[in-house]
Image (cartoon, rainbow, N blue to C red):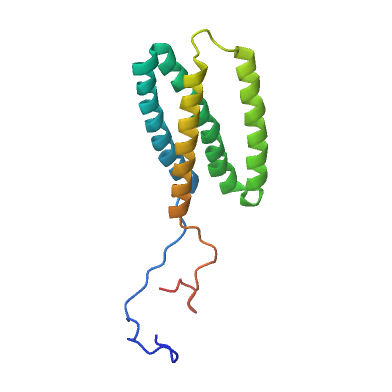
Length: 161
């Protein structure tokens, strides 16, 4: 296809394939973010072990594991809830977030702070995991193909290729 305003070589006559939306977006994000966050958490825990000992490494792992559980629940709700009720996905996320915050707070206050917990390494594990988890989610979302419009149909009722 050429333009009268900008003469140039004619467009090719090759076929253009259709590309639908990303399959299982939420599970793909869960796998990517878990791998990145978990890898960073293991490296941070190794540093904690070398610098502060076993209690520091366990504290780091505990902080990061809470973050991974917190965010993984949201992605699973997005996968199962958004697939069945896409119009109510935002409401599901909001309700889930509230339940998670209250639930995690109740659990942490009920358990209390164990003797072995090192607060600095707990925080380090949580912060490193949050930052890298979120970076992986942003990267994953940037690579997702979200279909906004239906594919055009041919007069025979098939899809246009």
